[in-house]
Length: 352
Image (cartoon, rainbow, N blue to C red; front, side):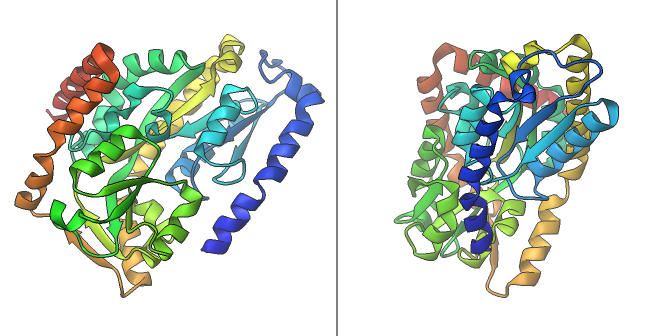
């Protein structure tokens, strides 16, 4: 598993050099312009996960639709091939990449309001309600695109990947159990606030360093959806899985805005249709995925333990959520507060 990570990271420089070398060819020169109706273009799309993970499944569905319905091709880059999350976002904003998937956990530095997904216990644990929320939410489908546009990004879709699960060196059932533990977080101020509220010490760390950090006890835990814990082999070095029910991993699929605005109307419709196709596919794919991946983990290791908080145990953590919500409003002001209120209204509507 570690070899997989090392190899993925090692080729980053080579891949970037290759993209830079393409800067003088016809394809690169026209990547931000409207493609010809006859001659297709090669569009570059990077995401944050490994082959077969949720973002990769979405990207492959998008690619297949584009290539089946147009002369264009889509080149998909997985985790480590062009760097980590911050790297692929910079490349998208610079126009090197046309499309990118990135979690609001990383986008929070650009768009503070995107951190709303890290207010704990805001999203329910029920998968179908969450899927319906993403389909119908005004906050997601009307308010967020305006925020992303301010950063030169065309927000095409947001979708859920799975409930967040904590892994740790020992089982955790209370904030007292978190005390003294360094829990890896993304570089997201509100997520750090959540783990401080939960009693832990938030420790921002690049994804490529997480496995080794757990293995050497630099960190004592981390959070991710189950499929990523399985795919990344995190259960091998952090075998105690804790279902706290505090949130979902969410991602956003975006385009470089200059590229998107330069497309013909027909190609804009093509991109929108491909995105809708991938979204519908993924919202049927994700429900039940956690259970399937947990079964794989349990089959692979006898050392894994699973802790599911009781209603009473969860309530202790939920009681600490309001201070995180207050911090979100403090960080984002009136605009963030309005987004949060719409978010809550949309969730109520989805639960009906």
